[in-house]
Structures are given as C-alpha cells and as structure tokens.
Length: 397
Image (tube, rainbow, N blue to C red):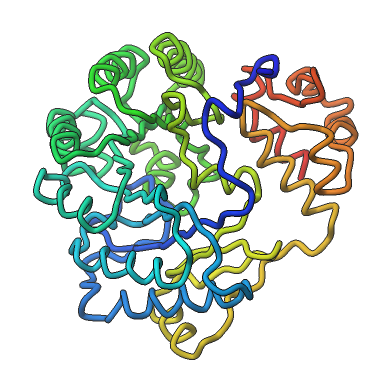
C-alpha cells in the first residue's frame, strides 16, 4: 500500500538488501565551478600519475575488508569530478576490475557522471561499450546567463544537444541535475527550464536547492555572496522553484521518491538508494567513503596522500559512529529523506530503537513536530518538512 504522503517503494525499484554497490571517485576537472565543494583535481592527467592502477588497488582493499570472496553487487557509480573527461578505455578497464572483484549482476546499474560539454555521440557510444548503462548529466540550469558566471563551459542549447547525442548512442536511462537558487535565476527562468527539461523526457531528474552560505563557506561562491559580488536568490523564489518542480514533474509522470529526486517508475537511482537505506557499498578514490559490515571508512581528500596510503595497503580512516544510538539516528535521517518514509517496525527490527520515539524526543517543543507525519506504521516528512529538512535532521542527530 502506498503510504500517505509518500510513494510506493515498489514503484521506484528499491535495491535488494543483499547486494553491494561500488563508488569510485574520479576527481579530474577542467576547472572548478564556484559552488562546488567536492574534492577535485584541476588539470591533472590521470595517465601520468597511474591513477587507475591505484584506483583498482584501492577497490581491491575495500572489497577485501568485507571478508567475502566476490560478494554480490548490482550498482557502480563513477562520480567526481568530471569522470566523463577520462579516456573511455580507462573507465572500461576499471569496470573490468569491478567484475573481477565482485559478482556484478547482469542488470547492474552502472552510472557515469558527465558534464554536457564532454558528451558527444562518439563518446557516449564508447561509454556504452565500456559497460556504462546510465548517465547523470549536470545541466544545473537552462539559463545561459546563470551558467556562465558559475564556470559552466556550455550553453543550455549545447546541453540539450548532449542529451540528444546520448539518446542517439542508445542510452535509455538518463538523469538531469538542476540547481534551484543559483544567483541570477528567477522563478520564471527556472520554470522555462523545466519546460525545456520536460521536452527532453529524461528518466530521472534531480533538483537540488543551492546550499546555505554556511554550508558553502569553503567555495568561491560563498565568498562572493559574503562580499556582495554575488547575490542570494530570495528564499520565497527558491521555495517557488522547488514547488514548481514537484508539481510539474508530478503532473508529467515522475515519482518524487526522495527530497531532491524524481523518476519515471522503475528508474530510481539504485545506487543512491543504498545510501538512504544504509545498504553496503565499497569505495575507491581520494575522498571516497565506504560502508561495509556496518563500518564507515574514508580515504583522504588529497591525491598524493591517497596514492601513498593505497600503495602501502593502509586501511581507510575509520569514521564509524560506534554508538548504536548514533547509528540509529543517522539511519533515521537518511530514511526520512525518502518520500516512502520510515517503516517503524522495520526500523526497530534493524536498529533496535523506536523511530517515532526518537522523532518525538528530538522535535518536542520546537514547533517542527507537525512536519513529520505518522500514518500506517510509517513516519514521513510533509511537503513543508522536506523544505525544512536540514533543520529537522540537525535536531535528530
């Protein structure tokens, strides 16, 4: 039964609990976008530093840490950075390593993050031949005047052409990322972008709200906002953009299955679902984090330190929470991101705590209590709760 205010998990294709994922961080970029706070390497040639040999070693160490021989896996996510900058043969070689180290299912979801300026039909055909089954395209906006100051080196028209090239190459699972609230974006221009997006008909859409200044404190954009060289989009405009996206995507057959994510039925990101459901994944690459056997491990966000650690077979930095209650609270926050919400009985069986009691304890007297809806044995964020989710999650953890 579909939970009130949520969506039927079966409609989005939740991954089996027994299968692992693989995340590989490929950090190379031509330039850094001013809002980005991920670890990236600008102007570095991966072949010159033997990056993919080290990445293979790192993945092997991650898989060995799990203790099983060729454990089952059904997703691979090649993120960054701009991994679509890399020679497709190097990506294919790494995917061959994945198949050697894990029992990758025949229908595995293999995602490659790609910037529009790197996508041609020839490149997309090479990615498919290498084993990529899904592209995540970072459009960010359909407004050229918004893209240019952020360091994006393509026009909205060129991004649409890249989408068409991927489709022509045979990709039947394409995702587009948008950011609501970039400086210069208006509700009207964002709505126009939604119209152009819907005309492309991707299988998956992510709509992220530009993070707050506090969250962006390490980026050039945050400094520009503080110094008055860029200007915040009004909060009511950003809320309007998000509301418009939820409404119009829903009207056009997309299921909102997570705060920022929408899909055609059956096209949820199977890999990202592992994060929100606290399912296991192996990881490789600088700054990459794994979650294996209930323990979280992280690699340093530095190419040289990462390489030295991997070549010395050093284990990842242990970032496990340790305390069972802290683990349960973290899982509760991740689960609540999903519009299907948290099954109270399932949560208690897995984590040993009453999810409803944890929510009541954290939110009592804050005025946030009505934003978590309880019905049918599930806890679900309301629509306004999704907008204020960061405030709710901060109190739950």
